[in-house]
Image (cartoon, rainbow, N blue to C red; front, side, top):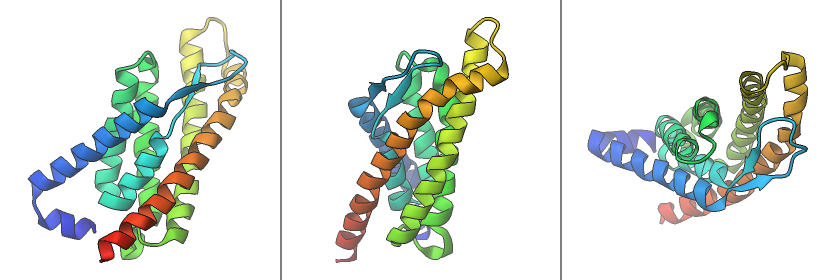
Length: 187
C-alpha cells in the first residue's frame, strides 16, 4: 500500500497523513477519560486513540502512520490540560506507530496479516507503556520537590494498568476494523 500511495504524489501523501492525524486527534479527544489512580504520580488518561493509531498504520503505512500518530496525539496533549505530557506523547506515540508498522507492513504485508497486526500492536503497546512509565517518572521529578528517580518510578507504576487497558482496547478495535476495511478494499 505504501508504494501505491507514494506514486500518487506528495500532495496526496500530505493530505492522507493530515486526515489520519485529525482522525487520531478526534478519536482521542472524544473518547478520553481519567483513569483512577492513588494520586501519587501524574494523572493518567485512557482513550481509544491507540485504535486510531493502529488503524492508521494498517491503512496508510508505517511512515505516514508514524507522522499522523505524533501529530494527532501530540495535538491532543498540547490543546488539553495535559500539555506537560506532549513531549512524552510525541516520542511514545511516534515510536509506537513505527514499531507496530515494522510488523504490520514488513515484508510487503501492507496491514493484511491479522496475525502480524496483533503481534506488532502488542509489541508497540509494550514500548508505549514503558515510555509513559519513564516519562511519567521524569514529569514527577520535574514537578515535585525532593522526589528521587526510584520513588518516582515506583509512583508511576500506578499508570501501567490504565495503559494496558488502552493498548488492549486499541488492538480489539483496530485489528478487526482494519481487517474489515482491507476485505472491502479487495472488492
